[in-house]
Image 1 (tube, helix red, strand yellow):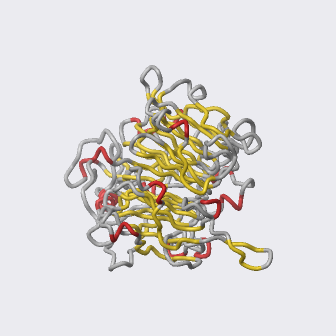
Image 2 (cartoon, rainbow, N blue to C red):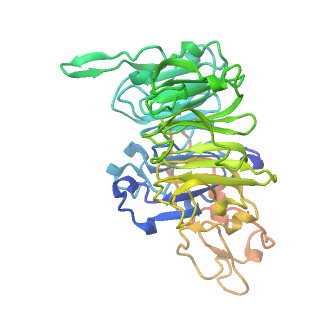
Image 3 (cartoon, rainbow, N blue to C red):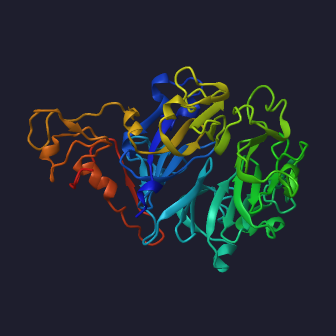
Length: 501
C-alpha cells in the first residue's frame, strides 16, 4: 500500500465534454467547460499516485494506490469505452471512468500518453501498450490498431533491465531503462529515431515513405551517457544525462532543438547552453514545437515556437534557449508542465511562498484554470484557485488539465463536478433529518455521524460514506494472464458496505 504522503486527489479544469471538444472547437458550449479546477466526483474517492496527459491528447490517465489505471476522455479504441458511451466514439466518460487492472501480482507505477496510444509501466519495469501503431511506434509489429493492452518487449528484457520512463512523439516512442540507456521505436522521418538516418525510400511514383522500427532500438549516440530523463514533442526529443547535460534531435524547423538554427538533427546533439561549460539542467520538457529546460538554480529556459503570436511563435521562433525568468518574476521554478497551448509552472517566490503560474494563448476551454476571464494569458499568471492547495503534480492535455493535490483543509473548499447528484434527504440509517446531516463527498448520501457503525465524530476533512469508502479500498478485479481486466467508475454511490472515513 502506498504511504499517505505519496497520494493525492485529482482535480480537472477545462473542457469536460472530453469526447467532442475538438469537433466542437471553436463552437464549444460554455456550460461544458470548467474554468477553474473542480473535483470530479467519479474519481474523488480514488487515492491517485500519478496523473498522465500529453500535449495533443484528448484523454488522461490516473494511477491509483492499488496499481490500477483510470482512463477518462476521447482515446483510441472501443475496448476502453464507458458502457453508456457510443462505442464508435471511443469515449471514457468523465462521469464513468474506465479502470484497467494490472497483471496479477503487479502494480502500474508509471506510463505515458500520446495522441492515439498509451503505455503503462508496472512495478517490475515491464511495459504494456495499446493504441494506433501504423508506423510501429508502439514498439510492436506494424498494424493500424492494437486494440487492447499487450506486453511490449525490447532489448532491455534480454539484458535483465527495467523501463523507468516512456515518452510519446507523434510517430516515435522513446524508452529509458534503469541503466540510463534510451531506445526508440516508430517512424524515422525527421531523424526522430536518433539513429543517423530517416530511412526515406520511394514508395511509388511521387510518393515516399520512411524506415519504421517496429521493435525498440538502442539510440547508440547516447549509450556512453547515463541518461536520467527523456522528453518528446511532436517530432523532436530531448535527453538529460546524470551530469545535467542536454541532448536534442529530430525536427528543428521551429528552433525547438535549441541548436542556434532551424535545421533538424538525425542524431542526438549536445545543446551548447547545457554542455560541459554551460548551465546544469535538472528538468526537460517538450511542447508540441518547443522545448523547455529548468536548470539547477531554478531558472527556466525555453526555445522554439511556444505560442501562436509574437516572439516565440512559428513566424519568429527562438532558435536558442532563452531565459524566461523575467517572465516568472525571478521565481525559483520547481517544475514545469506543457501541453499544446497551456504552460504551467510550480514556483517558489522570492519570499518563499509556493505558487502555480499558468499562461497560454487560445486556451478557449478554460484549461488554464484562471476563471472566466482567463481563457488566454499572455504572461505567467497565478492560478488563484490553486493558491492554498498543496499541489503534487500537473498534467495538461489538449483541452483540459489534471491537477494532483493533497487533501487538506483547503481542499474542502474546492467545488465538485457535478455540483449536485440525486440523493436522499434523510439519514440512510435512521431515516430522519434530525440535527445536521453528514454528506458523502462523492455521492451526497446523508448520514448522522452517530448512526454509523462505529459512530464517528464530525470529520474535519473529506468524508466518504461506507459504500464509497469500500469502493476506494476495493482491490481491482483480477486480470487473467496477459488480458487486463476492465471495470468502470461512476458518479453515484458505489455500493457495498464498510466504515466511513
